[in-house]
Length: 160
Image 1 (tube, rainbow, N blue to C red):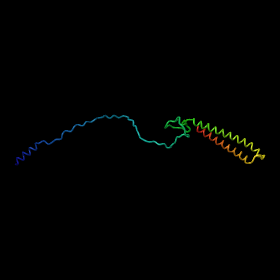
Image 2 (tube, rainbow, N blue to C red):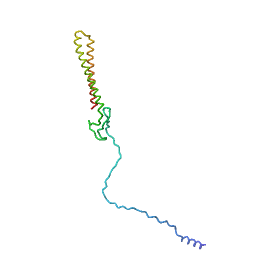
Image 3 (cartoon, rainbow, N blue to C red):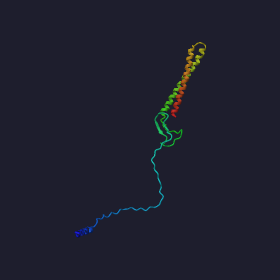
Image 4 (spheres, one colour):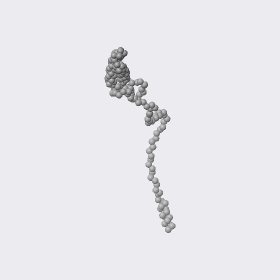
């Protein structure tokens, strides 16, 4: 039996040990590095906000003919920003001037009436009430002229 063991041992010793399969070759890319100047570009995503918020709006309501500025451009104080349709403002100015002329004519009539009433009241030909009425009418007519002048000025500003 020792001989049989020895034969068995020699047979197993002759057997080749399993070997690993050969590894595949790996492809490698080779780059030659050269020293050179390369510009650096920085790109950032951001949001800007003005330190002062300015509301741009027209002083009057109307139809816009032209916008006289470019969005985002700098504007100077007093610079014309919009051109509005002038026709309605010209018509309003004309109406205001007409109302002023009417009030001035009314004032002229009340002054003439007061000039007639004063001597008659001094002679007691008219009552004091008639004198007071004539004086009050003149003051009302003067106030109406002032108001009409204000309307003319407002219409001129709107037109400008």
